[in-house]
Image (cartoon, each protein chain N blue to C red):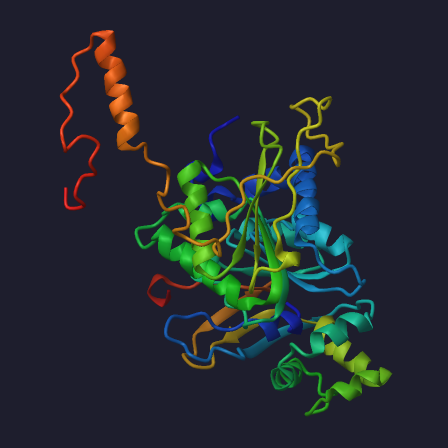
Length: 292
Length: 122
């Protein structure tokens, strides 16, 4: 695989007219995007009452993911920073409204009006500082803060991300939690390098039964790893869920420390073996003072 | 851009306390017919800032909406049709959105509002 697009140029420059067209005419990418957005919709877990909701598609690009939203009958608003991508979306006559905007500057949406948000392969771009004025931490904070505000209470946001490394994932998740979200990461196909997909499933408001992290998809034994075929369902298993409401210092060190008796016994044994062992004294096996 | 989106957008400039509603400067308005979905309208009604919607639809040349709306009006087909038309069928194609506090213009081209901020506005 070529090097990550994130490392080549800022999004509004990388996705120029050529790249946007290439992106949207590749049947492979279309297929992957459609699958990702279907999965994101599944994780979004909107109530199945047939009522169309107002959804936000962050980093909508050429509207590939929006198509899935339209198919499931919802209204959506898409936000993207690349004008070329949005132009392709216009040509494709997507149903949703498009906004040219930078998620790192905040979303600029009124509070509490959005019923759910999805984002496919976009949020990791925030970890890059593409201009001297860009500070990834501030941009992540602005993004998650404004996302939290614009979502209705109890609404979910499902963000599919390609973090470059562990630190990036921690960074993204950390800012999501700091903004007030609860939830965690769902990793589909954790054992496959190619198929592995990570979804941040975030929900607004206090954790409840309905906001428990959904299950991740695992590799089927027979499906080979290079096709994006998904004949999954059974044997789901949830992976790597972190929760900001977990009590922080519960795992304080109250491990059983081995006592004086054990140490004396041990030293005796060593002596019998013929090793040089320090003599026993009142200091043996005594705890160090805290100021040490 | 539909008025639905306009009703959700607010100005995001640093230091602006009340960036809603954005004033519309319309140059070109188009109408696209969309199928009526009453469930969606009922769901959205509570979230819509009615006054802003009425003002916005007037700037786009549609003055059929009542100035005040009650949830009970959602039972009337006529009201639903007007609400639907204003919310989903009127598109601002060319023009600008103006921040009510700073007067900053966000241009709208081909129906896409450009909400990108300059560096000093973040």
